Amino acid sequence: MTVYVDPPTWPGHGRMWSHLISDTSFDELHRFAEELGVPPRAFERDHYDIPSHRYADVVAAGAVEVSSREVVRLLTGAGLRRRKGVARSEGP
Image (cartoon, rainbow, N blue to C red; front, top):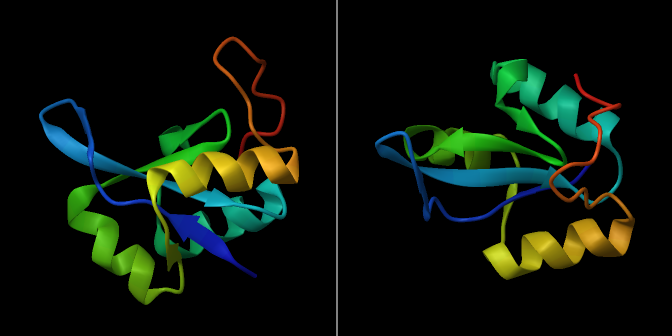
């Protein structure tokens, strides 16, 4: 199982955020997030939004650190990239 996380460089709601993804399947991603106690509401289209204060926890649990550009490349290459407006049929 390999999941990936980019640095917390995305601002929102008064804090910085990372994106947690899988390049294999949404099932793998949802299992990883559930094991970490990430709430299902943090799932958005093709990734989980992870607040900066949880970044170290995600990496310690085994997520591979990659750039934000690499997150997009991995999702697209795996056929898992979902753009805004696409139905969320495989949510947790």
